[in-house]
Picture 1: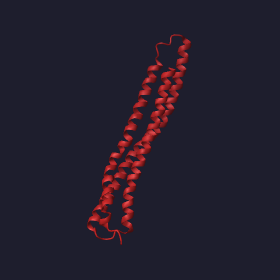
Picture 2: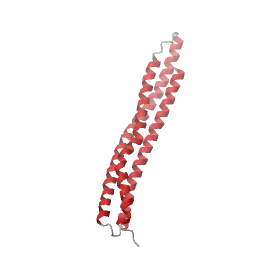
Picture 3: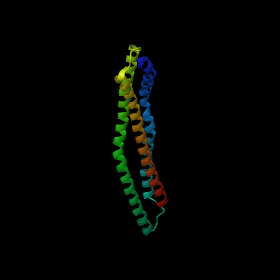
Picture 4: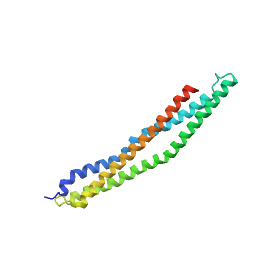
Length: 170
C-alpha cells in the first residue's frame, strides 16, 4: 500500500502553517538583541559618569581613579568591538530567517496545492523529500534565531559583569 497525497496532506498543512509562522521566529532573538544594545549603551553612560567622580579630592585618588577608568574603558571598547562584529551577523540571521520563511512557505503551500490536485495519487519519493525540505526551513530558522539570542545574551551578561566591576571599582 502506497501513501497518497491525501494521506500526507495533514503533514503538509502543518508545514504550511508553521512556515508562515517562521516570520515570528525573530521574536526569539529580537528582545535579546535589543537588551544587549541597551546594556552596552547604559555601560557607556555609566562609565562617563564614573569618570567625573567629584568625590576624589587628592591627586593620588584622582590618578588611581583615572587609571581604573581607562582600564575599564579598554575592556568596554574590546567588548564593543566583539559585539560590533556580531551586529552584522545578527542582521544577517534575521534576513536569513525571512528567506527561510518565504522559501518554506512557498514550498509548503505549493505542496498543499499539489496534494489537493492529486489527493488519491501516490505521493512518491520526490513529494516526501519536498515535504521534509519544507520542515527543514523551520528547523534552520529556529536554530539561527536561538543561536543569535544565545550569543546576544552572552554579550549582555559580559557587559553587565563589566558594569558591576565598574560600580565596585569606580
